Length: 183
Image 1 (cartoon, helix red, strand yellow):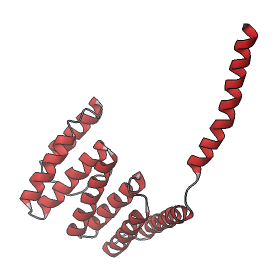
Image 2 (image 1 turned 90 degrees about the vertical axis):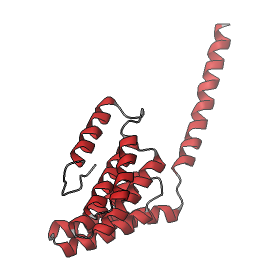
Image 3 (image 1 turned 180 degrees about the vertical axis):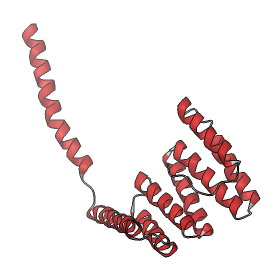
Image 4 (image 1 turned 45 degrees about the horizontal axis):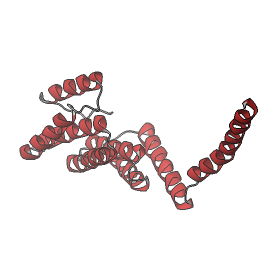
């Protein structure tokens, strides 16, 4: 009886040992075009970062923002990297004095975070979009975006600490603000 159980256990272990590598290798295979696009996006992001580090001006901020936006388009639709590039582009457009472009990028970032279910980043991004809308004197859009941010800040998917942090950001945003915050 004991020998039968040990034999069954050994057979199960051997079978699972052969099954796992096949599954794992299947999950790790990516199409070559996806790998190339990801590599190009990483290179663009690195170039944009280096450009800003070498010399910051409104012109370089705008140029780096375009590079980040191009990189975002290369990343997969549901990736955190896409959000990060869109958000970096928004911040750089803002620094370059391009409010309309900054707002468009941060709205895209907010929508992309929502698609992924990233409530924390989506709420922050909608809050930033609302701030930009106020700066552009678009009060209707600002009110809509603020409501989105506030609604997300009450999500049960957030921890109490995250909820508290977002509430502080939202209260601060009701005061005059002059800069975007990075997540």
